[in-house]
Length: 309
Image 1 (cartoon, helix red, strand yellow):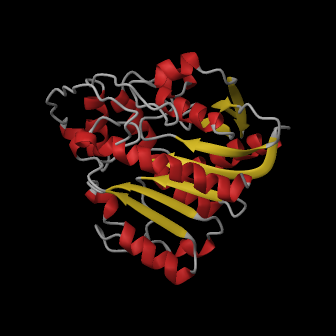
Image 2 (cartoon, rainbow, N blue to C red):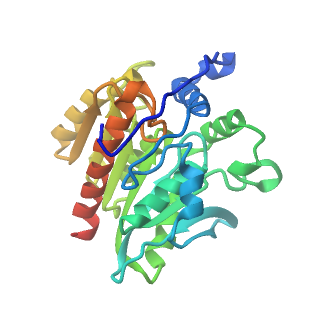
């Protein structure tokens, strides 16, 4: 853990999973997020993204220009948060793909942190138009409703909306023509899948998400999709060592990517849980340690393939 951080004492109320939630593959992630709401805020290293508790404060104090834009996708306006870096040269575009929890303040704060590091950050709300009265994430009554709605999105629609967000970013006068994705949990798996889908993508970062699965594999068995052969972008994978569900997919993915001659750099952080970048005070300090190691790797990887800085 960085000596620049002083952790406050953490009190987490005991939680019981709802029956429907317990059946979801995202149950552990959702329970961890609910627990995070009971954690005390902590001093933080401003070179790192904030945790969930600190997201609103970062957005309110950011000196960078962030704005909501509506990206048209087949006649549906997709509400998209765009943050610009403060730099004199043209910048690469990073599409930020939200968690199963939709377009949250935390995702917007991660986008702001990427802009602080010199990237144009584009964070589309993939639930745009799906909510009550045609709204997006913020139109749903509860987080449970949001997770259910995200789980019902079709892969085709997700890919189409990400294509549109990426294209919007690349058309900006400030863009340098290079692009990447960064995603978390649902968004991490989606980042991997989007790299398979979009041959012009320059790089993809996958936080605690799995590679696309072979649909012909036996139920309950993870086999990487043959579609990984279509990959052009290098992949950086960042995983919590205590996240057994996603961690179990990494060895097979690594072997498949190596056999295909694809660039895949997985990193497992001891003791860290699923969602460690958002829930930084969890896992008795392991999540914070993972954050301090994973975020610099993310920036170095993006600069290597996008910016040359």
